[in-house]
Length: 397
Ligand code: FAD
Ligand code: PHB
Image 1 (cartoon, rainbow, N blue to C red):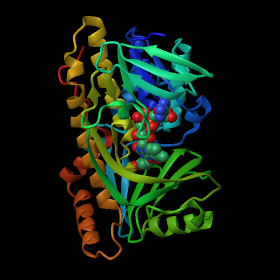
Image 2: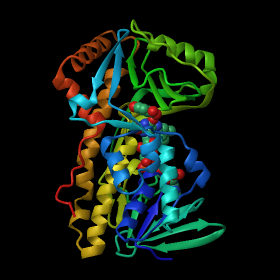
Image 3: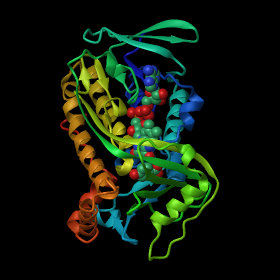
Image 4: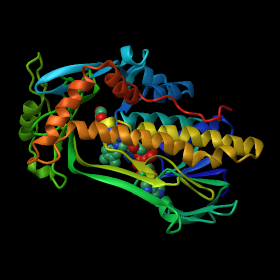
């Protein structure tokens, strides 16, 4: 088997890369270790940046997104029991975010790739990379009980944080940077109409909470919990009680409740592996970096990576020039670190770090008061949240 770009991982990064390459006439094969059913129903992120929506729409993936996506022009920051709106449209010259579940993006991508004759292999196992420093790298894998080898020009490692491609890079090449947080998020999906049209991020003495949504009938809600917390400790009534306490406000607000249809505990982590390239292997998305979900950036960052990678690959295959690919890692990492800082900042401003610390929470309130009263500070939040423009660094071909 032979293809130009062998893509390991059929999450948003791998599937979108395959789609963008197809639009430029470049063939690829996507190898995914889970089933189609599994990846289409894995509930994760829900916020699409302005530029992500534009890119998906411009490349023919906008039909359902435009119909079902919910456009939001702002978010609320709630602290000391009072809500303060950050008006994205006003602060960023009309930019917005769109609520559309990651699994919906994945469904749209899979449908489009298969419609266009794309090659996605689900339920592969035992993926191994070889020859990464040659111009003919290979990917060995098992599929349907057979051993296969895929010869490629380039390998894209889009297999997420727990993937294998990063580990094919020899010891000593990558430098890793990380920060862990002394808390996790307990997230639920509930059959209840959203309590608010826009997202509410709450700083509360009992810990952070977030009211988000997926549709006019589905709420997505999160609570800060200890990092080693277990779901068994959180019967539904305890979850609702805690959400009610943390979202309590002097304003007009009722927390809508309903049956919990999905729940998870997700750790919060900041992590980067540099560089994002080794020989003919290019890492993209969660395979190279993770951010805590407070900034709603993980999926969007994966999109920015593969957009840049696709441009570099087009240049390689059309003109035989490697200049854009050589700048891939540095170019991505500028955005990655901007998003790292933003996600760390949002996380630091909104969570309780140490119950015994009285100083930290006072700083948080001061910062929140500043962010919600100074136009300059609010603009910083707004322009990062809706997503900074893609930086093409001379790659506009
Ligand atoms: P992934 O989506 O992880 O895709 C990688 C793919 O590779 C997967 O389909 C996986 O099955 C496959 N794979 C792994 N190993 C192999 C292998 N060896 N061989 C073949 N295939 C392999 N971000 C937010 O902004 N908001 C959120 O609320 C949010 N919640 C999250 C909750 C969880 C539990 C997780 C894990 C992440 C969450 N994120 C969130 C982050 C966001 O979902 C990711 O940033 C995004 O999925 C990155 O896309 P990706 O394609 O790079 O990686
Ligand atoms: C979500 O809707 O899942 C969501 C929204 C905003 C975040 C994180 C997750 O910051």
